[in-house]
Amino acid sequence: MIGLLVIDMQNAYFEDPVLQAQQEGLVSACNTMIDAATASGAPVLLVKTEHEKDKSTWTLSMLDDEKGFIFRGTEQAAFVPGLSVSNLPQLIKPETAPSSKPG
Image: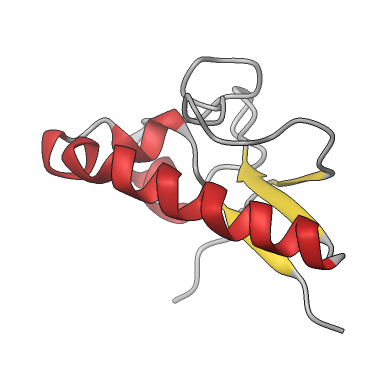
């Protein structure tokens, strides 16, 4: 079975001006692929990252920096404007931090 995964097309990943300059083209390319997959009957799944403010899902680098981001329910966690998300299933992936640091 062939399917399409659209991963982390969220506002937080386009905050840097260099990446923001690529956003429109990436959204267009994703929408083209979503339309083609949908038309052919292939499943499409939108995957996004969301973290909890309580640090339970923070990565090691976030813990080291004492800075979290992409918190559930924030504008950073939202899909980028213009991305075709209607009626598509979504999977939220928390990045679970290990219980202790290695080494």
